[in-house]
Length: 447
Image 1 (tube, rainbow, N blue to C red):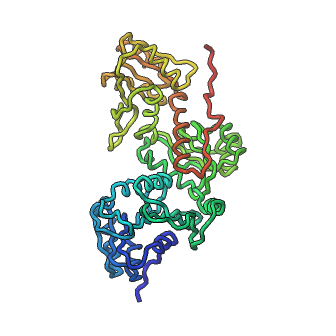
Image 2: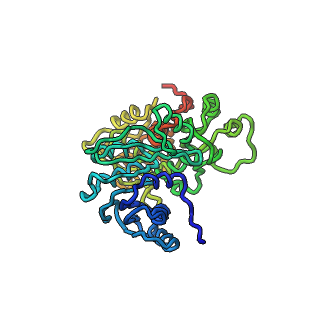
Image 3: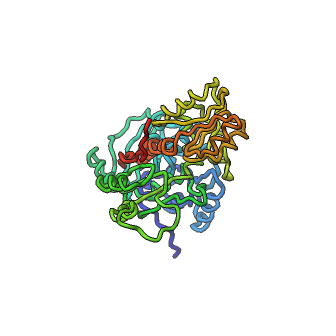
């Protein structure tokens, strides 16, 4: 007798919500394990499995053939090409994508008998809000524990019907009070270092980092639990000590702790402290610098310059790279641009070369990128803002009529911290994320 792959707890819980005798569709079916299981059970009428991309459909077709079941495969963008169904399953996607699919639902789906069985991997609140805006109400939510994580299944129907008792359901069908639900979520919804790494890789792929850079997980265990995250520009001894004192599980920085192989780790090295305290450490450096929404875009925002897709120094096949170029609506003098840097980045001092010409087209690049001054000039920029500018570059700017602003390495990159704290807090609301108190400029200045 042929044996088939058993459903995991998450898919089993979804299957339990499918009503007997209904026509059902699994949107974004992937391997088609769930539609095949429903077909073998004989509980349903017509069963559809869909995906937008052909490759998952090929995998699904192989599984359907292997199990010899009656499942109709459809290539569809969301629900657009799918016949009317009673139960619609949309699982294993981000909550924002599921909400978008529901928003675009064709009119023939919107009947009183329709049930939506959704299982978001992230952004649960966006899905709940999307359901409400689309005219659905949540009947219940089922929490399914699996491998020390929990998956939330949100079951919804059209608002015109009377809702049964509200509440959260555990995987065995118990209605949980709010306190019990929170406890069950706390027990099973543990975020891992791998989850944080994968999210950072999604917003700023590590593959796009400079080949000489040392990005990614530098210290720790991908499978370690994460409750507390500390964000900093650098891992210094003070940052490492702050993390240890506050029970931090993971430090996320912009700068790596080391760029080259090391031969020894002394007791006064921050690396020693991280290993001793079992604190994991991820660096997101040049991958963030070249990403859309990365450090250059943050600079434009702080300087009150318009967002831009124009890259100063493209270096990746997808067109991303270092720096951005933006244009002012009204030209301004160099001193005003330097003042914007001082207030936007929080500098103590800003040094600059004034070309004497009004500034309209501005290039920016975080960190120490003075060598791109020639590119900025070649691209008809009136001004270029970066940090750690060498004297020869300042002389070059004065000779060739380019306003060159040195806003400091620390100040043009420390803006990374606030942005990453906001992103991680939004994506992982169960984690406590904050900027390190000791993520500070190590220099003093005499004004």
